[in-house]
Length: 137
Image: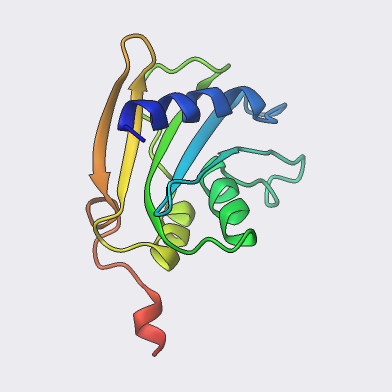
């Protein structure tokens, strides 16, 4: 799957977001090493703490179906579903990625739908000196 195809899947996932409080729609598309793609959207809750981000939704869907090896993720977001700039993963999502991904795992941060523009970062770029499972061995 190309980066562009993965980005478009993330953009489509934005439409499924449940965001009655913030209005910020976020979609993610996670590519597994075997080529399977899991999408996720953010899901808000009135008490805020149980809110879950799109990236974690995609990861948890994949992990709950037995996937453990991932290649890259695309993330798109914006107020009222409009992409008007980069929407990078939050710190909690980066830490979840750290649980399953190598330093070289790619994160595509979408900046625009038309034209399709995105930046590519590695997990190490966005979470240097990360706390990983290796510290617990």
